[in-house]
Structures are given as structure tokens and as C-alpha cells.
Image (cartoon, rainbow, N blue to C red):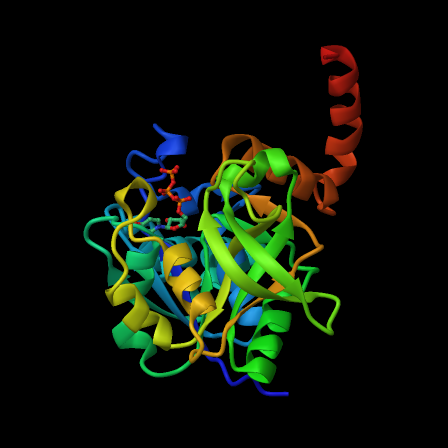
Length: 297
Ligand code: UTP
């Protein structure tokens, strides 16, 4: 079934302070996960869900991002002259992947503010938002399912992950009601980074959203919230409470997700993905077993 949604927005203008100094001169979305920058996995995910029109919201140090998705004539010519077609293909696949556009955020005033920068490009249609530091395993079809639910319910749709209650303070947390579908819940309220005692549930909002264009008006009127930033969660909370905007639904994700914005999860993502790779896993897995046996606790 052709999707009614064609545009993906990828905010990549955060300061990435948790990865300093690696992110001093490079966006954290460019950090390699095995041998591809994190953001390339995210663009690939958007494309596999049928979204080839990609808008990146960039901040300072945007050059690395733009260069990565652009041609590099000199490198391509060298690899071609050497007849190294495998490497040549690795170089060109990010260039041919999608139709990529860029908009600057200027000051990183929060995720909500970054999404608002997409208004001109998106216009009056529903669109997807994918956070550049959140990876969903390519074997899981979360975004396609979210787009399907958006089409069926004409609502705002977010991705939810059940987390350990001790971890909920790191996320936006959702108050939910069951629906007739096992993987879909209705969201009645949202709180950004609550304490475990005040969290409405341990369902955390993760970095995939399918939004209606009404969100832009709400964001225009959203005051800075937690951390002095314009929070997307606050705008979604407004939509969840509104009678007129179709409501907010959550698709409960039970697949594999890697948070590359956090140091320990970033390391885990690299180890997991490398262990599963045909070209690396065979050598890495026995080494890892031996290594773990020698380091102990
Ligand atoms: P994070 O809060 O994880 O990113 O935002 P951060 O601020 O860069 O990270 P730390 O905590 O300092 O290490 C989630 C996503 O939203 C984007 C980020 O680039 C990231 O993909 N973002 C955040 C923006 O594009 N603009 C902002 O103003 C804030």
C-alpha cells in the first residue's frame, strides 16, 4: 500500500555534550557505529519505510553531515582507478540513498524547536521525525507500523518502549489506555523526564514520531520547559489533552533499539551489531568470550 507520508525530519542539531570531546567538532550523529555513521542507519530506516524526502535539522559543525551524503569525486575516482568496486559502492551508497535537504537550527533551543524549523519544508502534511541518535534494528519495521497506525487513526503517533522503572527519568513517560490492538495504546498524558515516583508508567517515548502538521502551531506556542528547552514532549502533551486534534497514540515497540546518544549504549550497539555481521562476527565473538572470561567482574 503506498504511504500517505513522504517526508522524514531528522533533528541533528543537539550539542552532544555526553560525548565530548568527540563531538567538539563533529555532530554526535556522525559517530561511527561499526563502519557507518549513526545517521546513515537512520536515513536508511526512513527510506525503507518509503520516506525518500529527508530534511536534516543541523547546527554548528553541519559540514560533516552534508559531506557524508554528498559526492566525493576525488575518492570515487581513486577507487574506480584501482578497480576497488566494493569500497566504491560503500562510498556512493550514502549519496544515492535519499533526497536530502538541510535547514539550520541556529541556537539549539530544544527538540521541539528543531522540529519547528521543519515547518516550511513539511507544509500541511503528516510527517515522520526520527532522532539521529536512536537506532532501530533494520529487521524491525517500527516506522512502517507507526505510519500505518497514523493513516488508520489520523492521529499523532509516537513509539513507546517499556523500560526499567529506574530508567524512566531519562525519557518522556506516557500515561496510557489499552486499545483493541495489542501493540497500540492511547496516550492520555506525557511527562518529560519524571522521577520514578511521579512517572505515570514505565512506557518511555523513544525517538520515532509520526506527527500531524497541527504540531507546528502547538510548538509555536510552547514555552520553554525542562532544561529551558522547547520540548516536543510538552507539545505532544498538549495534543494528548486536546479534543480536536485526533489524539496521540503509542505503538509499543518490542524489537531491538540502540541509543547511540549514551556512551554505554553506544558501546553495546557497536559490539552487538559487529557480532552479528557476516564479515566481523566470526572473529569477534570468540575473542569477546575470551576477553570477558579474563576481565571477570
Ligand atoms: P538530546 O538531548 O539527546 O541531544 O536530543 P543533545 O542535547 O545533543 O545531547 P547531550 O545530552 O548534550 O549529549 C535528542 C535529539 O534531538 C536533537 C539532537 O541532535 C538529538 O538527535 N536536538 C536536540 C536538536 O536537533 N536540537 C536541539 O536543540 C536539541
